[in-house]
Length: 115
Length: 117
Image 1 (spheres, rainbow over the protein chains, first blue to last red):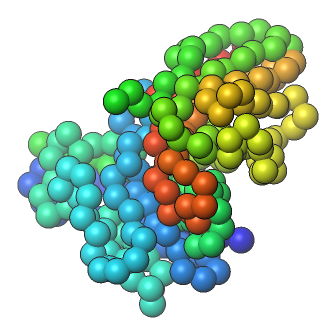
Image 2: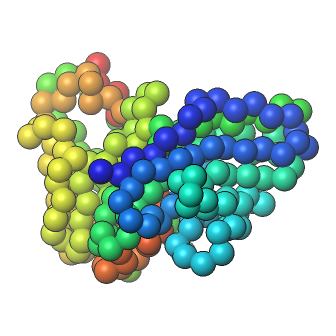
């Protein structure tokens, strides 16, 4: 069965510093990988996904993520954090050749950017 | 265009009552998903529809939970005889097409916040 781990419940970073939100996955075969962000009292917003090709994926709001097959990781990064990036971030996985399956989500990481 | 919409945005009910939660997917999206987000938990898959059929009901937590989708569009999630542990945010998502093999992006609605007293 597939699973996603987000090892940090909370990440604190100063505004202007680079940020990393970690994600590792377990899935048989090659995965599709997603990052979503949730602002307070809002639904999830899609940030980016890895399907195939270049391991570095660029997404919305200046975020990017790198697929690392050997480490089974898909960490989310941003070179310079903004206070407005403070939110709850979810990593999700879907195995290939699985039809329109539900995503399997991590438990989320709360990012706090301090001015 | 319009995104996924859900209603009501908030629902407070008494234990033992039935509730209906509604989801309106993005127009043209054939796949529709229901998830539950409990405090301190991640997202828990409940059920998904491809068109009007639900090939995967494995996530429904008990037989008090049911869902239907009509006309390949609007879906209703019904919880009968609600319990306090049903309190959560219920999220709906839709994605474009069948045969996406898991790579289609799911777009989420704002959720319905359910509180069972």
